Amino acid sequence: MPKFDPAEMRAMIADGEVVGFTLDTNVIDGLNSNGNLDNRILLGVGNLRTKAVRAIIADVVAKEVCGHMNAIHLASHDQLTSVVKTYTKIWKQDAAIVDELQARLVPRDTIRDHADALFDKFCDGMGIEIISSDEAISIAELMTSYFEGLPPFAGADKKHEFPDAVALAALRKWTDANGAVLVVSKDKGWSEYCEQSDYLYCANDLGKALALFHEDEAIVAKCLKQLKGQPDGNVGREILRAIQRDLDDLDFEVEASAFMEWDASLEEAVVDSIEYAGGAEQRIVASDGHSVTFVVPVSAKLKVQAGFVFSIHDSIDDDYVSLGGSIKEVSLQHDYQVSVTVSGKGEEEIEIDETDVNSATRLKSVNFGHVEPFYEPEED
Image (tube, rainbow, N blue to C red; front, side):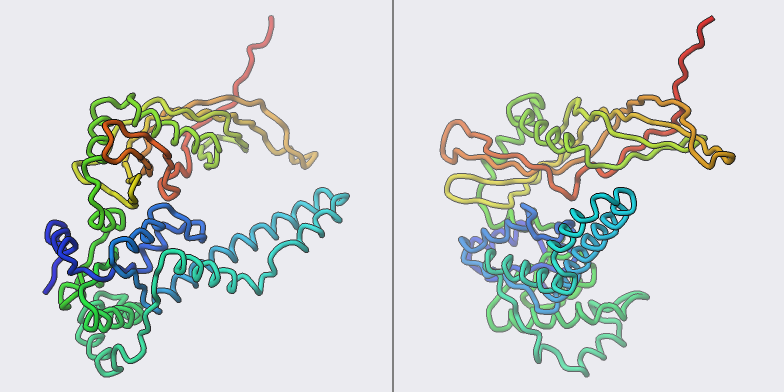
């Protein structure tokens, strides 16, 4: 009855006993917010090809991921189409330009094919095999597990666990023929199922799971030690710059309250300082002969400034009357995960090649609290 233990797993990997690696839908979805499968941590799966480990995905999981990607792409397409229609109602003179733009858009009925093609390209690039669930579990066995509440069936929503049960059965069948597999899932049902299997081990964090297959702890420890002791040192400066670059896009929402109608525009966002927010653990996600990529959790102190314009509705003229504006600045703390790529293995000095904020941890919104217009004092 395998229970995931990092130290034991590291030893099994070193001995070549772990031959497979797989992901649950919830892990892929959590790192695929844009629907393009280009998250740096997710792409770290491709490095398993250098470790004599086969990356596999159950066909049920593959179909779920493609379905979710299709939904993201459709929503984006429909949102753009809606905005374009609204634009033509305001700027009618640009109708010809808008028609040309719409003609260039991907046809809506081909979006599913586009999502499937992206997923196929991702699997080919990462060396991921799609394994079949055919004859992995009988209807009788499936229904017995369901009615007896066996993993992964549990709780009030157990009717939704049939795809998971089929996917896990496919993985179990694969391990019977090939050997142990490290599974990454945030689902309790998956974890409990793996504990009752012979060759399935379940971890809940992709970065930590991938780190088990790499032996670059020394270089990462050196970077983290510097970051902890000198937040304004070389490592800290590069991480701060990555966060500042991300903030410079000003791609987050303004939240506020006021006694009247208001509109806002973001003016400036600045990183004051950062602090390492992790423990002793390392999260290595990629490695080759020259460089290593790892994830660093940091807490950043930010200052964000927005300009507010206020108005009130004039029922007589059926129009909005401006009541002035104001600038407000707030300070806040936000937790980021930043991927850092360094080179210089075996060298006295290491170089930071790249730093990038994990999109899943980007600043999504800023609450400015209660805001009011600024009034200039009247002259006597």
